[in-house]
Length: 226
Length: 226
DNA sequence: CAGTATCCATTTCGATACTG
DNA sequence: CAGTATCGAAATGGATACTG
Image (cartoon, rainbow over all chains, first blue to last red; front, side, top):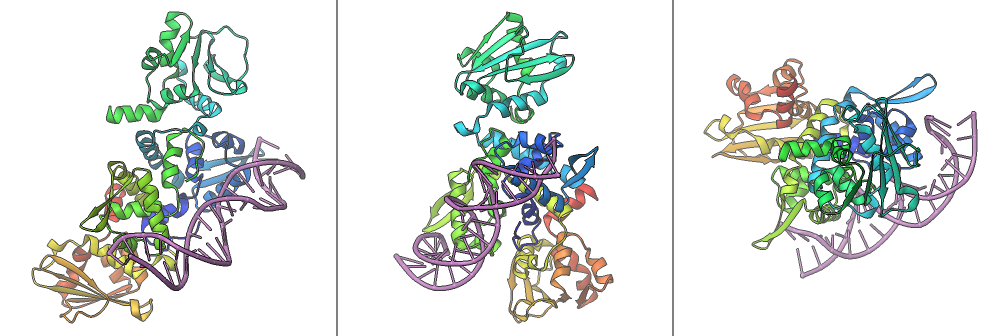
């Protein structure tokens, strides 16, 4: 965190925030992650040493607080940190609107499913246990199959067959589902274009969009600009 | 600009924006700088090689456009770049609110006077040529004396005595004026506390706050949160 | 679970000087 | 004016393995 040598508030802010990974760690904290390995799941490409280092910097900067709760370390945002939320959101909207080209290295089924899991509208699902199976046709076999299980108001994501009846199977490329998630493709559009195949009773197939939705940023962008 | 390997829009945005100096260059462009050496004035601690490199990155990212106008290179923000304005402002407000401790290395009379110059409300000044002299008691002699000359609707900043009659002389530390500019100290408060001395006719002394004001960010913060 | 430790290739950046 | 060229010190951070 070397200084810019400027009193300008933007410069002072960036002294704290411009290091690689920093804002992604803050994003994770804003989304509710509180433990080290929980944070890691959100930034899997970051080494643990580096994550540790960033958390310490942010603590020194008064953005992150660390405490021990029952022997577990808990990271939380201070008020100073929480006030970064509008900035992170604005960055997300800008990124969504303007930085659309995703390389293959940007696609990651673990991150996508984890992200979907975070915001699944449980109340839109049937009361009875309901399973949606995904299979991606463009990734290595071991990451290609996923199951979303909603039961008793809880969501589970598995990368192994949990053995329950499947209500709908979704077959597509990881890229297609990522684009849908980002709001760049609509569910019906993707189905019509043959980029997604849905297998199951018509009623369940129709429900998929409301069950899964899209990222909250995509919703916000759609709300803001059509 | 190495990738984060995430489809998350915040990550994609930061791939473009998180490198050191990048957002400060964008800030300068937002403030209206258009030529290479004009940009340099706003980021004097940045080497020209690095500035050149950043401008190229931003051009590749579609944030900055470069053109030749009468043999001069002109840098401008594209729409994509202009849409960063709310983000830069939000960062500035956050920095102003939360990152208040300035080291000595953050204080720079050239930057401060240049920044003041950018936003002087000429219409608040008398019609006749009016000069305010500054002398800083905590910086090397060669950077200690400044003159703001407003005449004919134009503002000039000199670091040498232009020779005109001086309406008010402002004597203070560079730190004090910087704090006033950032809105952390008010003009009357600073005078009462003896941190600023004003010399000149009472009427002119009273006018100084409206002639010089404070940074637009400080105004925005005051408006937003008292 | 929650981190440390170590290592080193790579990058980055600041300083300075120079050019058409 | 608008950059390039060059250089070396410093840091960054990715990979991997390890610990209480």
